[in-house]
Image 1 (tube, rainbow, N blue to C red):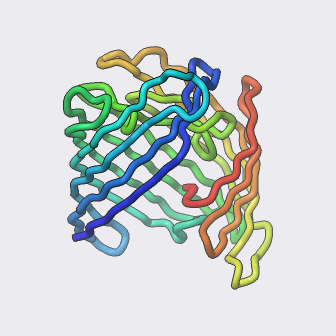
Image 2: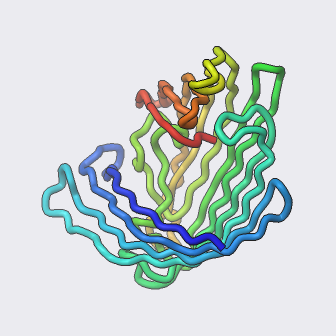
Length: 258
């Protein structure tokens, strides 16, 4: 049994086409309770319920947009298989996470919806310093349209890095990446483990903004080149990204990447 509580506050972009029209403040505070079963050293199953109070309010641009505020509650079941040799920057192994959710209520959701998301991360060593990796993930909303707190998002570092975070939203999404990482430098023990450099290509699409209407499925891609440091505070990445159509960004991120 694992009770938990959380609170978060961050900025979310809003787009019309590829034009950013506003920035919203996304505030959430709540908690939940999970019941878990460890099926061996590498896998676990969790079933639980989560509830939170959420608020979306415009911070920049698009004056006059309404504030969205209310409570959200959902049942969730999650299966995790983790066969990788590191939780931060692996060199080998596979990690897979499958999550099924039943959203009972949420702002912008008129009736209960169900969602499924599957994420995989795979590393194949080519030697002591180099590994190939490929990641595949996807999600879908069933029997309804996702609300603003449940909609799937693409854009930002390691999620189509040449585009802004939250640039592409939808009831469904698919995403994949393929690349390599190679050891560049060993950090002092008090600072962390290693610094890597790498390159990878991403492709993905978020689609479906209405019930039973997938809409146009536009697949976008991004070329990325960067460095990743495995430090005592977690992985830190700095990468430059460019799309085949000319969009480009430099991204800095801290936290789990794969």
